[in-house]
Image (cartoon, rainbow, N blue to C red):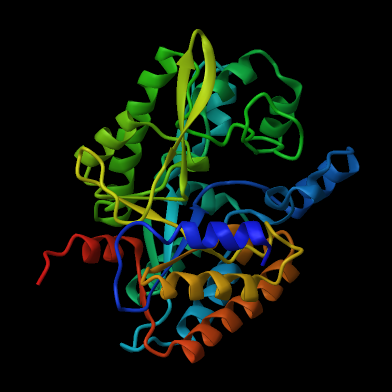
Length: 376
């Protein structure tokens, strides 16, 4: 571990809530959202000269196929914690995707979205995926929480389509949001759904969040108790609206990016958080302090790097909140990606249990409930 990473991994664990229990939360973002539609599209873009192989989200990420979910759940079920529970993933879920057909039929004047289950039905090898989601939920290894209506800045994206932006139109024609490997006027390639550049866009976010929360409840039959913003971009106003919709806990990393318009110019204000911190609406922040991200950091040993972070968290009496994005478990584009990373993930879980037999696997909202439990 570099000196900088050593310092950061210690600093993030100094403030906030503590426990003598060895608590492990695995938070995984982007479930339900489209990314790369198929191998064929990937190779088409590669042959066109786009640097998709340099962007791990373009290279590996897609909707989780039946084979992806089955393999992941097998690994999660292969271990048990000190209370006999399997490892569980807090699956932060995007509940809708753009309805490309209807948007095109409107001549790009109107945005339409579809339930992500509808999207799954169109992908080969995905029609049974949501049934597997439900099996994973019932067996305690897969716990959806709200990540947004779409993983998309609707206003900016529609403007780019209306202005016939060649890169965005190319992506649209292929059933994609963006080709994020290429330079974009948006910092995160149109993926930052709650960012805004004027008051009209800012106001539209309230409707998008409200509809997303309602759709989440319709799909899963319960309200999401926690939320994580796309690209860690959100505002105080978003928090207030989410609180009214039942969100008690705000997942994230140490740094929040809060968009602001200053003298007509867009900028991000950085706001720092720690686990156990509360805001004015009474919501509690849950801050990630460990990472299993082999796709995002291919030069590192993902198991060793994660174990070091978990060890540091436990040394400070903190829960280990591990970030593990969906793309690490997806083999629909490249089966070797799933196979290699699941072997590493299984090794991580087994090594943690061997090193700390008293570990308890819990979800993000269960951790939030523990933090807010009245003192005995």
